[in-house]
Image (cartoon, rainbow, N blue to C red; front, side):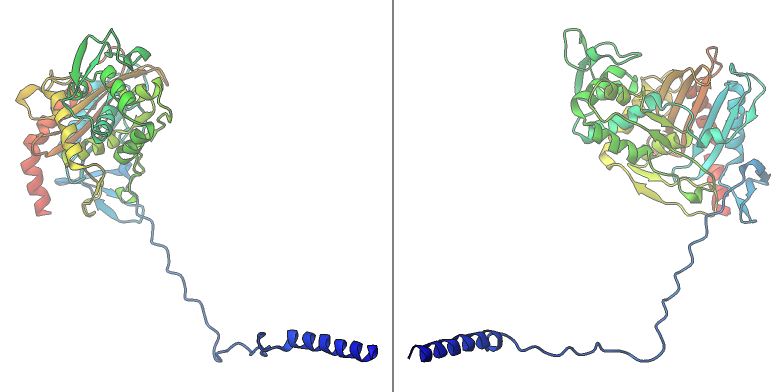
Amino acid sequence: MRRAVLLAGGALIAGVFVFSRHGASEPTAVKAQPAAMITGAPLVEAPKPAPAPAAPTVDLDRIERVGDHYEAPLSNGKRAVLTLDPVLQEQAEKLLDQARAPRGAIVAMAPDGRILALAGRRTEEPKGGTKGIADWHLATEVWAPAASVFKLVTASALVEAGVAPEDKVCYHGGIRSVNESNLTDGKHDGRCESLIYGVAHSNNAILGKLAYQKLQPSALDSVAHDLVGTAMPASLGVKATGSELSLPHDKNLAFAQSAAGFQGARLSVLGGALLAATFADGGEQPVPRLIADEQPSTRHVLPADVAKAVSRMMIGTCEFGSAAKSFGKKQSVAGKTGTLATSEPFYMEHSWFVGYAPADKPEIIVSVLLGNPENWHLRGHEAARKLIDRAIRRAPDREARVGVR
């Protein structure tokens, strides 16, 4: 009896085991089928398109005047008609000779990006002199601090952050520096003026204080890169740099000083022209052109209302601010001055002016930088006024000439 029970139990266990392996709840194994194959010639990868040829470069050292325009050889063996205006180019070179600065450069530009004058001059003598050497690289390379021209960048960031141009800020000092005491409200703040006044008169305390109280370093850095930090296009035909930026990442005294233009930003003369052109065209920055065949184009870098607000500050600079002695209310000019001395490679007081005219309907953009010795002959805004005067008189002839070509 016991043997029968054991045998029956063993059979039951075996049945359970068999069911667990072959029961209906477990899918039956299916023999794998070979993958489908397409017979015929092997597939060949399509060839990659050849890279676009590099843009040809212009040899400005071999520039030649041909009738009413300039031409220069290209690196591809061809010749290019340049956008340079012979009258304005010669005027720019003449002004640099008059300045006698050890370093100097001028760029004049049409609102659509055509470079009408591009000139540079240097002397072997650190104190400057009448014997100068033409060096156009001084117009396209960075060799000087942006100085108070950078206040245009800071003002743009402040307006974007909600600071109204007419809002008053109380301050003290700020003519030649920004100190810790300038950053917060205090008993020494005996005068209150607007952002318009601060830019027009290039007051460092106003710009430094407003930046310290109203801006984050990342916001100023972003606007700076939008306005002056874009790489120059290869289509320009020459190697050029707009700026070198190294703004502080922390909100401290160094940040306020950078916002006022003392450090953290270096600017080329061509970069200064593009900065001014942005305000002349309501926040649209033209792509610079030196080869006449290149088509005009722009890029949007600033809201139109912000550009308009900063333009008012630039008009104030020329009407009642730091450039009023050269322009005043008789001439409709918008601009910004800048002055900052450095001691390397030798002493130079960098005298800047960037701007455009007429202020209400721009015809000419100018950027002037003179690295003057202690005994100087010409300031940046003085040279700019002479160039603007000539450009405004020249404009009808130039436009007619461009239209015929």
